[in-house]
Length: 343
Image 1 (cartoon, rainbow, N blue to C red):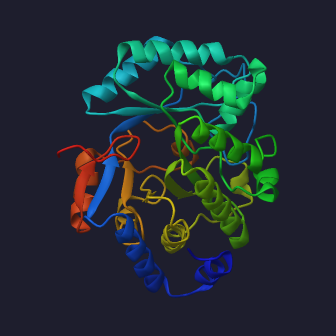
Image 2 (cartoon, one colour):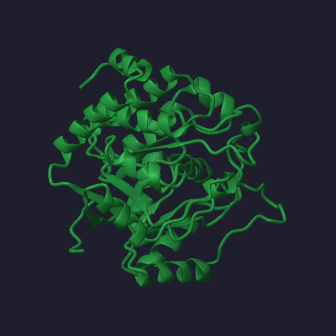
């Protein structure tokens, strides 16, 4: 396990290939069977109403805005049926922080989905869970337990951005702070709910901020062992207020270096995802030799980063070909990174 000082040396190093080779060795330690995975699922944004007004987000709408929505159950059911018909095994469902949706709304929605469909619910971000707890007037732990009992299976790592309060105050000052984000995941792990961890970088943070983010994730994983995966991706600036200050988006070289260092530093997290959504299929493919062992989702629907300018698309065969051409065996997985599918 490398130190934060050693991580800084890697970020400063011009030896991209050497860093990639070290990350590849770390990947093989976790995944010795030359398999790279992907998932068929769908992002369902049940609402775009949000009270946080994050400067990096082009998706949210204020409550009462003419473009604001809360999807009906029937719309959500249709999206789930389309996902299952395409071979999907789960949905990633999250939205904004709606000021009028208490915990009973989510309990009713999740129970109704589970009564109708055999589908994994990878749902709600840490900020959403904190918001629901505050709105309902109960503890975060009780909120997670009630949502789990209603059908929540696991929690995505969204809302992390950069886990350093100096950055968070600048780009999302109304959103939860670093310790609050970590506390949601800590409570979830203690309640037997697995989660993922993410990092949205390239939003004007320093290398020290990124290392701090990686370090607090590693420390929580040491404490609980509850993270299934780590997913870093780069900030998309189009249509965002933050984009006026961040003049250039991250390069492919920066992405590969950050991905590789994440794999080396987070030696206690089994899975590292290389993203195609913000960097495209070719860079995602190279990422499989820079520490990534998973290429993420076919993503039948994506409404958040696409609003900020991301325009890449992928079919299941695109991802399988990408994996094969990189020298790996493609395997479909589920939301908990179990690759038990025979294809």
